[in-house]
Amino acid sequence: MARDEKLKLPEVLKEIDMSRAAFYRMRARGKAPKLIKLPNGHLRVRRSDLDAWWRDLDSPAY
Image 1 (cartoon, rainbow, N blue to C red):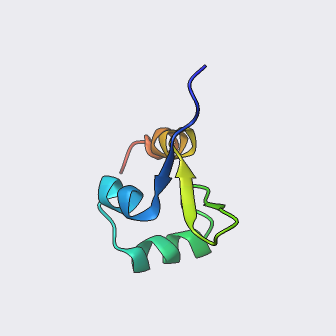
Image 2 (cartoon, rainbow, N blue to C red):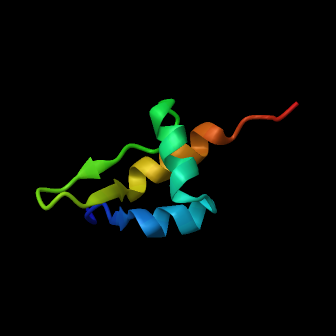
């Protein structure tokens, strides 16, 4: 089984086409992909968590 890739925050922001400020606002509301804080303080997002977040957004817009 392949290891779950850990994406840097700038990579995630580019993929979801969102500013850092907007991402943190969404995170404060509990609507952002789950973040992992590494021992050095850097933030990462598991590829599987980001993919699950995308799937959860897949709902009709009215």
